[in-house]
View 1 (cartoon, rainbow, N blue to C red):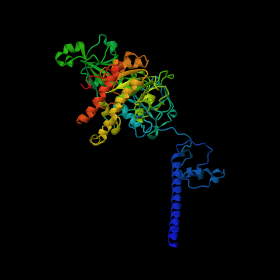
View 2 (spheres, helix red, strand yellow):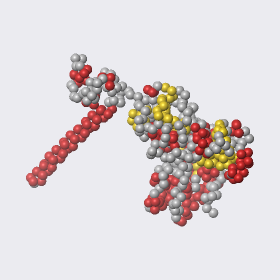
View 3 (cartoon, rainbow, N blue to C red):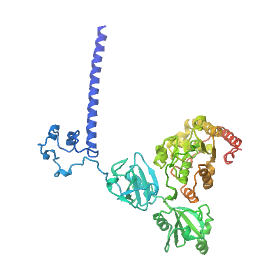
View 4 (tube, one colour):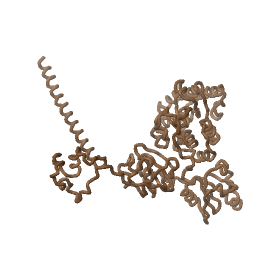
Length: 541
């Protein structure tokens, strides 16, 4: 009996020693981390002039050595003893008060200065995005350079704006006191303040500059001067010359007719839906070409007539949902609604990636009623009856399932890997999500108080008329020019082109039988509720 007791006693002693050793090591590590953190924070953090709590640490950081804290307070101690040995001038000591961030040294662009930013009527209002954690000057410059903008402006450490004209009101550099969230020590604006950089060139790691896009051949409007606000007359003018000229003027369209270059916005007098046969702009009929027709190109810059957005000035009386099954194009519909109405949309969820792309309502509480509508994928009576009305967005389930599977496996813009499609994950996903596609529509038809049913396919095919109907449902008055601006910027930042073109058909015959049954059920339910049925293009015969 004594032998086991002795072994137990020996084990407990060893355990006691081990615990003591681990506790001591933990305390020592914590102390070292605190000292290191104090050293790093000292030159940056604000200090009261009379504060002496961290002076011993500060003395070590400045190379003074260890001094008794009472000697630091003694007036008889010479200031020379407190001066770091590597400094010749006491004024060279680091400032113990707040220090304004400096322009980023790693940036290729030139720092222009600090400017006041008017959120209602911005000067820099192209290519807006946010990054709560990793915003850097280079990141913002690359985004602006990609679209051929000259200036990049950073605000409040997290926001990036682009443009080709400087804001009118400059202020002192001390007002741009925020650092970029992903780049310590860099000037990144302030609240209502922009740190502006001139963009010299794309960074080596960035994507290529966006190219000019051919939009087609068009008949010239009757009043060219009214329809085309700016022009350039130059011999042998090229597409690149004309596009560059219009980009600097921040026009989204560059128009060529012989040696004449015009810059314009899409308007009711010059609508991009009115394209004609491209052969009419061909070189075989030069006289006809010069007289009646022109070639239209999309420049890299955004149409900024519809990029301004804000929260509702007062709480909305109607609580409106933008409801859809996942993968049905809800984010794209939000992009269209925000640019059409000028108001942010909210979300039942929070997605930092969407916030970074400019969906500022993503951070707002979904029941705040400060947004024009609220994204939701929820179904069920309780979740539906919380809303006063809803836009119900429906998409072909085959497309929706593929889009949502891609998102779950690879994010908003990525594609699922081949191993995901070939694994058991894909058939399990179809079996569970296909029924949800059906039940989601059926529940909203049953419990929704006031509905507008919108089909994704119809929205893509006939954007302006469908969007006009959605905006009217939201009780917002919108000009025709703004709707045409939305059409010009219709793609947004979250456009994935289905599965990759070379991928094989992912649906087995058994999957198709299952999905087709749900399509017939939803089609019948829509008709029973006096709505048009599903688009004939994907309803099985």
